[in-house]
Length: 277
Image (tube, rainbow, N blue to C red; front, side, top):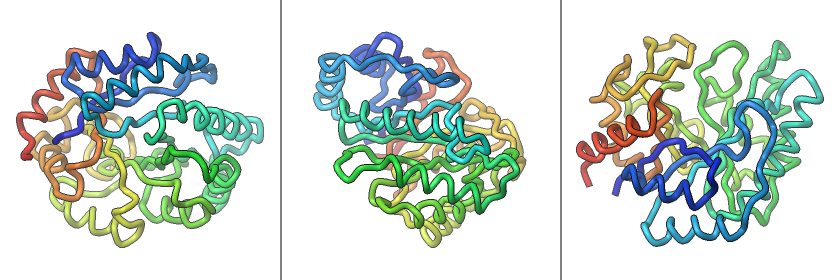
């Protein structure tokens, strides 16, 4: 079974997201835990969250992939920004327990001229502060394109963060196809090689989800500009190979292409037509 979905708005609540997912043919989805470009978060209605859990169970959804706000920078030079990142992640992980057993994805952050070593140390420090043994949520570090001083531009950086995190069993990785392509990993011509490198450095057991996006840029551009499926430099054929790869095909795939909801429905249908059970 292909677990495929997209980002859905949480503005109308949890149950509404589940119903919208069903309406567009999705059986997983992503949602922002709070305002993606701010810091505010609506209170969770436990009954509403339980209704979503019922939909997920009844329709055999894959894992949901919640997304932290873009404003969260765990390795910022400014201590106030780092404090917000710690507080927001800790609060989000408490809120995630209303929909237990799912994923919480975040961008590792930007070291802002402090250097990679300091960035790795600060991100691991945040994770060591907020992760709890009792949580059911797995926190996913996202692979990044390497724009500016972004952390997570290579598998080695993610490995260093994981190794310095005490509760590393609570960590996984979300592979973004646009980001790794822009970062220089050739998933078009050598997908097996890229996954082999991931396995050697991090371990495929850590790979929990995929952001499925085409890219507006050529290999190694380090720019992070997503394109619709088949309209970028990665291409539909390569992305179809991604969803059908034996290592990846059982993971949740989240579309982050520049689409409206009807566009996502079309991409979901297209990918289902090209998936081999």
